[in-house]
Length: 224
Ligand code: ADE
Image 1 (cartoon, rainbow, N blue to C red):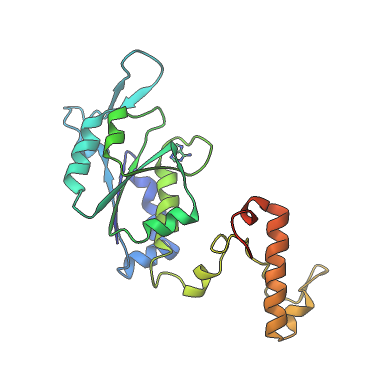
Image 2 (cartoon, rainbow, N blue to C red):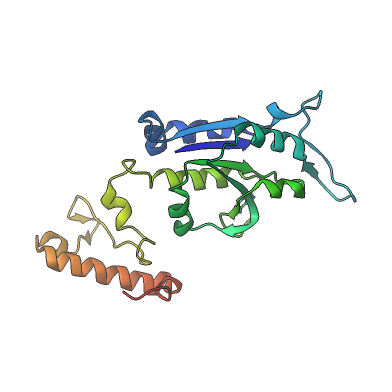
């Protein structure tokens, strides 16, 4: 898979792309991720990328020319273009699973004060990562990238992604590690029993209990 990200702030991605699981996936050749500075595509002599909005109003608006030229330059027949905006479809694990099968994703990061409406015509999908306003689409694009890359075969252990929260509309069961007792809090005895069937039952019961308590909306989606 290849992911191209169009942003006004490329250095925001430095840590994200170099560390941990994403950094390793890139090094292992599981994904190729390139970050492009929208400003590099500006035809303005001063490399301007935004301007005052027609009709007045506060704030600068991202101009279409640099974005259209960037997408023209990067797009191939396999490309799927995503626009990050709080007005987009609410992003979820189900959307991540759909994106995982794309060969090439181009992510356009919006601008905190707005972007020219014509930029929308470039997008195959618009996503919001939640009902709050970020200063730009950069963090949102990292959320999408992270959630998709970890689903690529071989990036994380298969069991980790198959049985995790949201895969079966249940939250994860609680997990514990050493020591058996910490500040008076004990690991549930069943986990120390070595009895696999009992452990599996306890985990499933905990998942249901937890989901009922914290996210009852998930239980309405499917039978368990
Ligand atoms: N840009 C600004 N806020 C955003 C959000 N919540 N989701 C996606 N892109 C955004």
